[in-house]
Amino acid sequence: MHHRLALVVGLSTAACVTRTVTPGPVTAVSATSGGTDDVQSLVQLALTLDAAGDAHADTLYAPDALVIGNARVRQVAPRFAGISVGHGQVTTTVANATVEGQVAWVLVDYRWTNAAERRAEAGRATIILEKRNNGGWKIVHAHSSQPLPWEP
Image 1 (tube, one colour):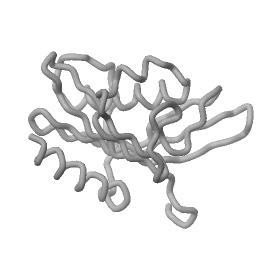
Image 2 (cartoon, one colour):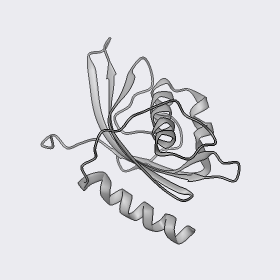
Image 3 (tube, one colour):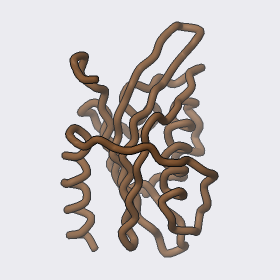
């Protein structure tokens, strides 16, 4: 299992920069089911809670999860590149999820906005999840970055 996870981490991290993703639905998260809608919803929840600085976000991650935002290891909110904790909101503009047995990966483009400060930041993330013994998904790796100014 660890070899498969390492391969998925390597491929998915490369995909953060080079892969175009297609729109996908985001629905309510279910802790024990196993479809792509569930992992996409969990990722949306992780982004939303991260922007709010909500400690409940911690429950979505495995204890040994590795989270990298803009080339820095991040252990607390804001975990994702471009997000600032406070009065902003996160919207997911593109999401694509793949579930392969006990491992899933989600590629997502998101936008953090703070209307009061007239600020908006874009980000892209690859998030790898693992299905645990209780049937629920946990984030085991997340890599996010902001697009370069010349990227569309």
